[in-house]
Length: 215
Image (cartoon, rainbow, N blue to C red; front, side, top):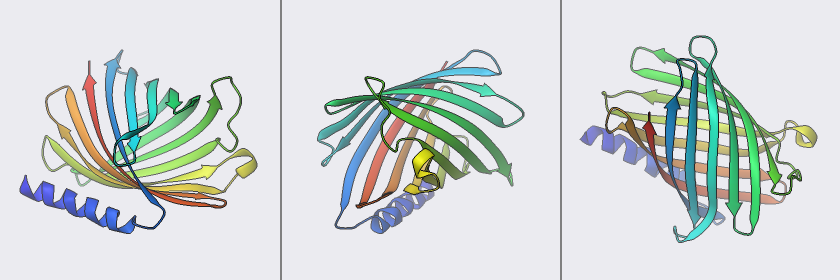
């Protein structure tokens, strides 16, 4: 257990040092989700998220998300999500489609790949400029025992449409998943996020915690 905490703390510290700059903000994300297994093929889920900034005192976004995951062939899944966000005075919604694939390496190591296409709209149905994105993520995790699984990964956000091929954002992640009980899981994580947009060079240190219950 001590080894798990030391490894995770070192990863968090390394990412935090790399993310420091004059134009860096700190955010805190928390969420609680539920999964409902309909069959071996279909699974529904619902998730509530709150995102804070300014030393965790300013609520930046209130998010509700739901979707369905469908098993295709073997470890290949697809997932379709709908997200509704209240962000200060703005309200917007997002649709995204995902392809998810994972495989094990030497029993305890798992490599997960996810490709996502997403599009955001304002609450009145107007497209948000430059919000069509293509995201690619890789996660490498190591299952230490039945309860604890630390991981590390990265994700690229690429523009589509008028901004096809333009790199919008880079996100590096580390964290640990804890199977508290048979159906109840917790994840603590850290993102080093770098926005790469014309005339903007913003970095974010994102600390978060997520709880999930499966039916």
